[in-house]
Image (tube, rainbow, N blue to C red; front, side, top):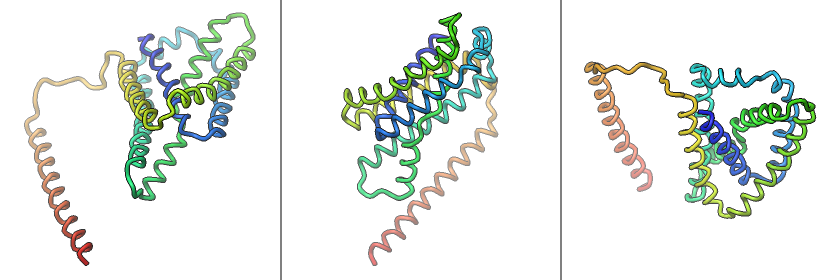
Length: 233
């Protein structure tokens, strides 16, 4: 399970750098400064963690399910950005609300990178016992400050096509979603499965689907008739 978590952290870092390639240089630098300050200032909380406590967190089903919710929200927002960006690239007329949603999601940096940076800080502090905590944290902060712009510009140079980077960003988020399910569920499920079929509930569900389909077809027919009349005038 720890191996899956490490792979997930690597993919999250790559995904974060890939998202930065769609932003302007000044925002990339601003994001790097924020991340570096986060790493440098979090050392008082990082030294309070222990390997036993982290293992307990990974084996806590309730905590991991809450983490899965946060991870899912982040992945959904990132994938929504990819779909809106592809829509804008391929369509002619763009609605205002679509453009606003695209801009908001474009500026959304993602929240998974900060738990990953905190985990890296804890791991580095454990790896250098006897050294100054502030020195280790701020050294790592400087590395983060340099690595984010450098990695962003390197990815932009290696992958100059925006469409290719967008597709790769979408696939990375899909991979994060799958790895997140594996690492957070940890072999457990939220509910217990049942072998008996509730035929009344199944019939009610099928009835709702049928009614919804009929209403959708009626609405579609009325909508196109009204639209055709307006165009004819």
